[in-house]
Amino acid sequence: MKRNSDGTIFVAHLAKGGMLTVRPLRNDGGERIGIEVEKEGEGPPLSPEVQRAADTFRLSYGTDAQREAYDFLKRIIVQDKDERHVDAPTVKGVVIADPPEIAEFLLTMLATTRGADAMIGDLNERFTRECKEFGRNRAVRLYWARALRSIGPLLWRAIGKVVVAVVKRFFGAGAA
Amino acid sequence: MDLTTLEQHLLLAVLGLHPNAYGVSVQEHIKDRTGREPSTGSVYASLDRLEEKGFVKSRQGEATAERGGKRKLYFTVTAPGQRALKESLQAIDALSQGLVWKGAAV
Figure 1 (cartoon, each protein chain N blue to C red):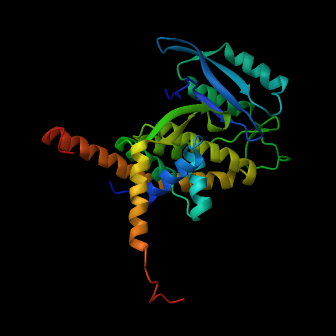
Figure 2 (cartoon, one colour):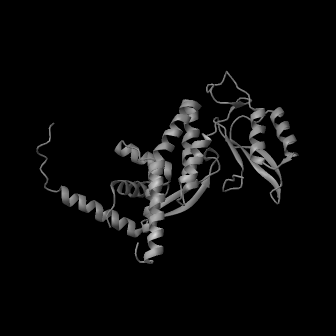
Figure 3 (tube, rainbow over the protein chains, first blue to last red):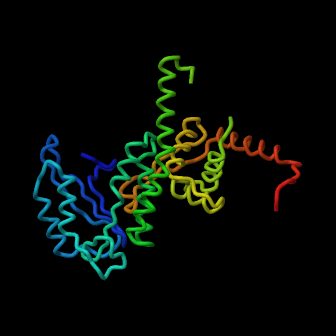
């Protein structure tokens, strides 16, 4: 299961401020995982209905907590046509803006540097800002553009590291 | 030690932003001053290379909500990094001194 470095399994950015964090409550040998849904930061509070749904979900367990968390959030997400960012799903007036998963996955696969996590964080930071500024559709396009521009340099860096490692292995430590 | 143009820009940006130099601030600093924004991937790949050479040092920072719980990575230029940058810029200065800009269409 995909986990962030701080142990969270799902983070939904709230474009009006704050975020929804889903983290495991307990983990018995990877089989039974409960999740906790929590709203952090600024922005409108979660409605009683959403809070009730979160409390109920806390009691359920599953083998794929990430998928369940995503389904849970999908269930409580409603499209709010009155919002400025009508293309973004909202939870009772709170805009949820998730970065494109495929682009994020691509970069995670390619980034072999120590700063891989920080790099994704940087893209997320700009994505959240641009969601507020331009709306989700444009923010997604900009995210993709940045991700695609990053593939080349990251790939070259990864290849370079492999070449250096191979040269060191076959020609001794002093060769590279 | 030779530095590429991007490496020069990165070292200058990290020095200028000290102690708040991290990916986004570095990219925006370079864009503001040169008009061209390096890609996120090239910034991290180059900073990784510079760190390997001992020219920059990184430390983990805070994870904010807008970053999806991912920590920032702050960079500082080391003494060898400053020396390499100085030498590199001096080489450019030496090459451009006394240059007569002729032959260029205005």
